[in-house]
Image (spheres, rainbow, N blue to C red):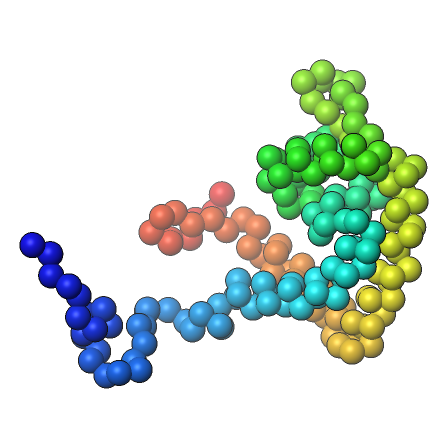
Length: 177
């Protein structure tokens, strides 16, 4: 017969009311992933109303912005560039194609692959969103500071580069790829 766990069992031996469970790691609020997520959310909160006004999701905008930086790109490369999983990207591309914001065709070098590009209608949408987007960037820059924002972007790029070759096995031991 299973016995009911007491509050003493649940709290790992701490019987005090109001005590919390402690894991042998840094505070949740001080974890790097959570700090980055909170910062991302603070930034995206500024852009979402404008995107909604133009009938776009964050992911759709990310794809359209990525497509403005290339003439055309294979779908798998676009997934990597826009940090989207393949199934999500496929659904989003279908939606964007239905709205005639992108164009999709078969790759000349490999008929199994597709390449996408932004359409003229997609570029017009980018041009419509751009003034608001740039105004938001200007407001963020004014509030946070141009120098600090540039330093932050440099530091984030450096963090990404320094971690790019780092992988961990299940035991958490670092190994180079």
